[in-house]
Image 1: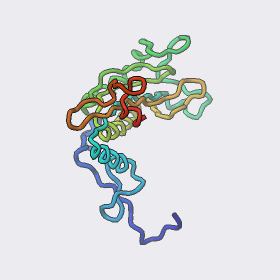
Image 2 (image 1 turned 180 degrees about the vertical axis):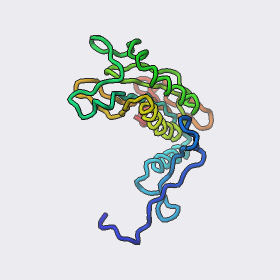
Image 3 (image 1 turned 45 degrees about the vertical axis):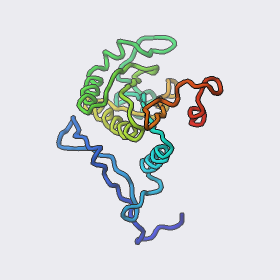
Image 4 (image 1 turned 135 degrees about the vertical axis):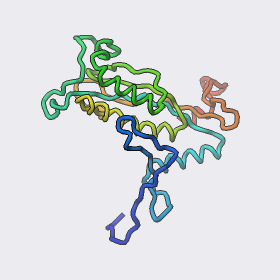
Amino acid sequence: IGRMNPVEDEVVGIPDPSTLRVLPWDRRFAWMVADMVQGGSTPFALCPRSGLKQQVAEAADMGYACQLGIEPEFYVFHPDSLGTDKLRPIARSGDVAPTPAYDLEVTLDAMPFLDKVTSYMADLDFGLFSFDAEGGQGQYEFDFAHDEVVASADRMTLFRLLIKQAAKETGMLATFMPKPFAHLWGSGAHFNMSLEDRHSGENVFKTGTGNQGWRKEALHFA
């Protein structure tokens, strides 16, 4: 709070070597996630990754590990329609009411883009197991393997880069904006979370004997 001065410590990104991935669309480049530090080694208070790691450490002290699976949605459209009254989606279904979700033709018509995405995800070991057309025209969702919560969050940042790159390579533009179209479905990212007992590996969200069959851990987590 207050004015900055020229002798304040810089905030520096320290790459995490365990996250290094060679980018399959241009193998001259590698990608890493960085933690923000200030004053040499002190985690920057506003670094979201450091904050998440702190919560993971506190959960570990309590005997828990958090697992996270993410189902991201996004839109893909023609960039020449940007700035016009109507964005033009990469593919459009017929008049399907109430929604074109899971329309096979919308998926097939977008295969030049989707094929690049699936290829890059395979090269990067995402553990892709499904993808489909979603409720909006030109909207898609990809589902891939869950992981420990920090690893899943890291993977999501790489996924966003991957999607935008594949879109550019096919002459398209991708956006993860929650509501790029006022009249169509918004884009989200469903989180599938669980807590495991660090010693037994048991999912502590499983049905218990407490209130309405939920264990106390699940109720406190919610």
